[in-house]
Amino acid sequence: MSAGHDHSHAGHHHDHAPKLDHLNTAFIVGIILNSVFIIIEVIAGLTTHSLSLLTDAGHNLSDVASLALALLAFKLTKVSANSKYTYGYKRSTIIVSFFNALILFVAVGFIIYEAIMRFMNPEVVSGGTMAWVAFIGIAVNGFTAWLFVKDKDTDLNVKGAYLHMAVDAIVSFGVVVSGIIIYFTRIYWIDSVVSIIIAVVILRGTWSLLKDSLRLEMDGVPKEMDLVKIKTELMKGKGVVDVHHMHVWALSTTENALTAHLVINPEAINEFDNIKHDLRHRLEHLDIIHSTFEPEFADEKCQQPDC
Image (tube, rainbow, N blue to C red; front, top):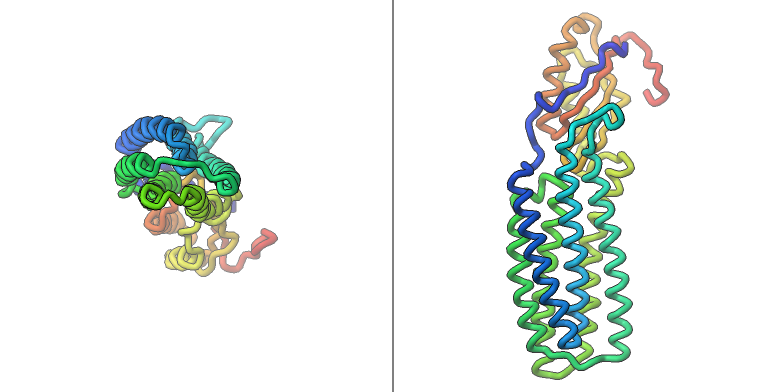
């Protein structure tokens, strides 16, 4: 009974996605501030021979690239669907989040390699300069993280941006501490140790981002989706006696879709339009904005292999 399929459209759902207007400003401000800070870190790192500052500058550069890609992805989600891309370019947000995670893994590998090399051949660094530059980093990264804090739970890319900036603020604090220690003790290998700690902190945050983005890339069920809860809501529909052949996946980092077979009592089949409307409304509250339903009679045998 494929004629019973129904698709909910963007004009009929609650808008759970973050608005682009203020995020556009947040991304641009974050990109500018961090770009300026990278220049300061590179100059200071080369002047003081500080690996901590140079590796943190490299990480901040990857963050700027991540912010730029995330901004591009958000803009692409506004491009209208066409005959070749019937969902538009919404999936670009998933691709970007996955790509950003890969960039960070490469950066971590480079940081660890350089830290090990420097640990075996420590260089004299200026602890005071390290501390002051890193202190500026706390302010820059902390402010940038604040720009994303209210939207961090609405989108994977925004969450990624927030985590990157928050972690960077913590990392900068670590560099401040190591700079102070070096200034008073002249124990220069502390610089390499801090670099390795930075790499481990980045790796922990990146692993979560990689897993989540890879799951969405493979059309897996989004982490926040509870299939049991979704089926329970669908079963509340009038005349619905069973639900099977249910699939949930992400269209983007903010929009989810569902298809399902609904087994309907024969006496309720004439009310299927009302049933669909009710179920779409229930699903919207579970952050599923595109839904396709296929009705079956209770006494009809499903022909799908996974029924």
